[in-house]
Length: 276
Image 1 (tube, rainbow, N blue to C red):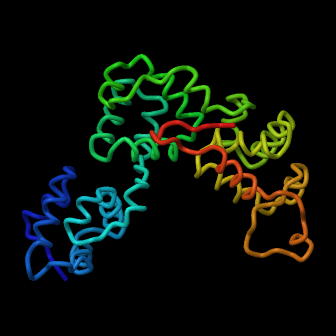
Image 2 (image 1 turned 180 degrees about the vertical axis):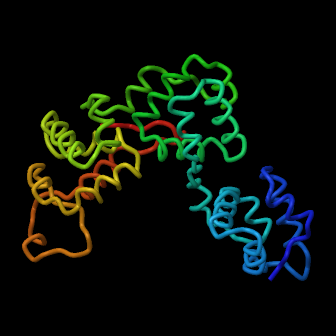
Image 3 (image 1 turned 120 degrees about the horizontal axis):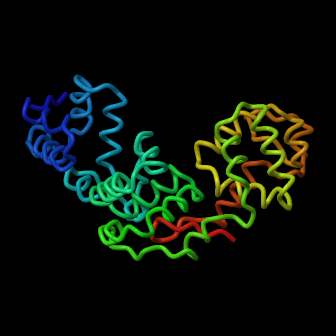
């Protein structure tokens, strides 16, 4: 077990990411500690709970140069695919409804520490492409933000590309994300009736909801067979499938969403979602 000095603890438990990296590099550069990352993690656990240790690891793992400096080889495929920045609930609330000054502060801070790709992927994951499009609409006039990000100001055409061919009302989206089970069921069926079928329905879900909201829906309705029958779709797999179910030709939610994800991908800049 490797125990940091009090001064090193001060940096590791502090807010400055570069100071944390420097302290860890200093610890592992000691000949007696070199390469003993497990020993350092065990030492960190003496003052940090498992969630804090995991958060620290996740915070540092996006920096390939840092990982290599402490003796961790990073395959090219991993460095080519940056980890999405994980926004806190407070940050997400600010991005959705906070002042433009606070929104700018968050976006520029994340971009400076983690890079534009990690920022873009994190925004798509946290907001879903519809809410991200709304955020871009709000920030189009903020020249300081886009200059700081060193990116061109998005055009209305860029933003429209983030919306599905079918656009549910904001009231339906609100009920689907925050309503009671019965209300969600009615809203989903209403939304489905307004689309051309499962492909357009699931495309709209993938565009207007984020990953957590989609997972929540799949869990909420996994046992509601009449609901899925009305949609003409198979329920999400639960690991247990009857013989009759195994022969169903109806597309499942996973199949439809996987197809959607194959069509609607994050572009090379991390922000855009191309919807066909």
